[in-house]
Length: 379
Image 1 (tube, one colour):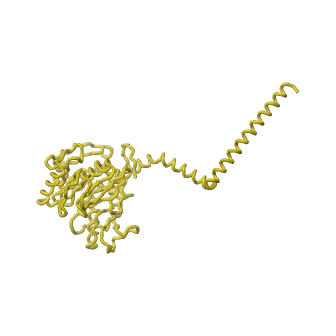
Image 2 (tube, helix red, strand yellow):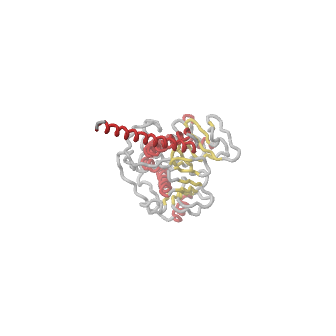
Image 3 (cartoon, rainbow, N blue to C red):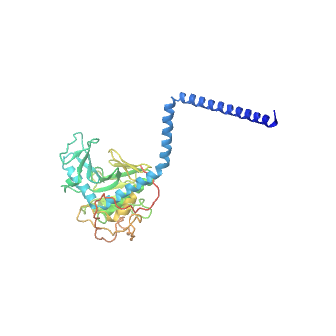
């Protein structure tokens, strides 16, 4: 045997030994994997678990993008709805008509969609059955729906509405004149404060000048009176004015049961109050009701539309000076309003004519001209 043949035999033997070694390792790995799979319920269970883990991993990476897209879509929905006078008028008419269905029905909220309006009703054990054109929701008998084309002006006092967020494709409103006179917002600190500021801005823009008194501690750039002084001023003014008086405060004052003043507070309520809780994800829960809405886009949407909100249904309402608070949605800047230190109100100094509504429907989709404004974790 030559040297080359001897080398070839040794190489062939080495390759065979290596191959047998790798084969043994592969057989051992397969045996261990099969043993582990059998201990966990079989290969079918392992495959389902693997698919679920892969899906959760993909969803975790896609969630920030999905949340940002959902936030922008809901903010545009709120901006279109709040700018449209028909949105507020239809919500007010729906609550007035629902109140006329039965003396025991107390409408306290409205869900405005593109073609229909839902009214949330509080009542006793004897739930009234509304006649046509009303339709009772299949899942919640205390939610009544009516087409926007069937709405007409109702009788009775006009509700004082504030937008609190969105639920799916609906903009949700609460009536501050129905139920407790104290509306307390709690929960995550930054979200609760931003929600109170957005509600106060809506009230201050829609009510006549001097109707909203903002106490100290609500906004870092607004030094208003103390909570007790603000409540005293509003109580004194309520006896001589026909429109509601609202106090916005960080602490809850002592509100008598028959007080004509509504209170919007960040403090812990005492006595009879309506409770709103804001979670870290931006979800807002109205205690005692089925309402759970997304309030995260509300502050930015109100900042973009606050000077275009229609006045409350009273002849005393005046229009504030229109400005633009969100350059992403309204590219033409304006001048900021001047706070009134005497009354604690954030109302503009000079009234102006209303901005004419757009020609399209409140819920028509406009061109998307939003610029990136930061990623928000959404509901």
